[in-house]
Every structure is written in C-alpha cells, then in structure tokens.
Length: 83
Image (cartoon, rainbow, N blue to C red; front, top):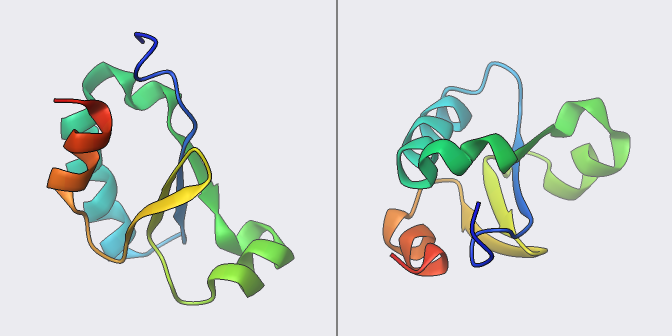
C-alpha cells in the first residue's frame, strides 16, 4: 500500500446485513488489493458500537471521519484514494 493509501479504513457492519455485503463488494472494487488493510467491525460484537451505530450500517470511516453511510459513494471513496 503506498503512503497515500496507508490510512485507517474502517467499515462498520452487521452480520447478515445485505446492504453491508453489497457495500463491501463495491468498496473492494475501488480498493483493489489494498482491501486487505480494511478493518471490518461488527457493531453487534461490541455494546458501545451497537449503541453508537444502531441501525446505521454500513458506515465507512477514513481516519476517524465518516466517508459513507448506508450506501456506497464510489466517487467520494475514489477522491479519498486520489484516483
């Protein structure tokens, strides 16, 4: 991963969420092999995350700031990647 992409990508998901699964597929296309650096966090695995996000998944954060929520916004992700 080059220095521009070496950032903190976190995708908050819920097990069995079809929106989360579709989001991840679309995100994987844009991240390519760098998707291996993406952290997936199941909000139901942590009480604080479950309270914080409730039904608001999927949520993609980049360096601690929300980049996308609910639906994948490829243009925003590609802009963040500089492509």
